[in-house]
Length: 139
Image (cartoon, rainbow, N blue to C red):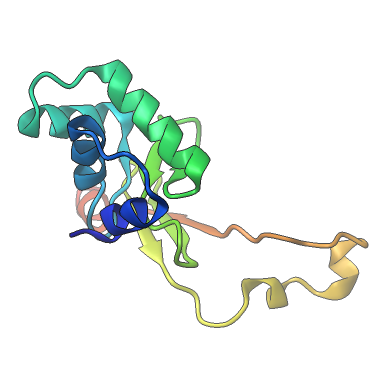
């Protein structure tokens, strides 16, 4: 059973066939699908699943804090099931591929106290941008 499915079971979330398929599609390392990509993959497993059901399920998973909604550079939102592990993102500025990266140490420590301007910082988001190997090879 996937990490996401296990977490949902532990929460007592009702796993209908449609919800289960969406969660299964999101299972894996470096998964950052758009809602349309989730729908396309879900229909391979459950042809009758509607686009609305996929969107609603993704919205519920985000509201539960089990999936992160990732927006980069005005592109379509992507959904990241790696919600319970601290990580940042590496984004290809050409094709939009997203990879999870794990920083060593506290990223907040890179922000000196005087540069915080009295803010009580509660969250740090670091996004690295560049070209993925495929796009770099075609440059």
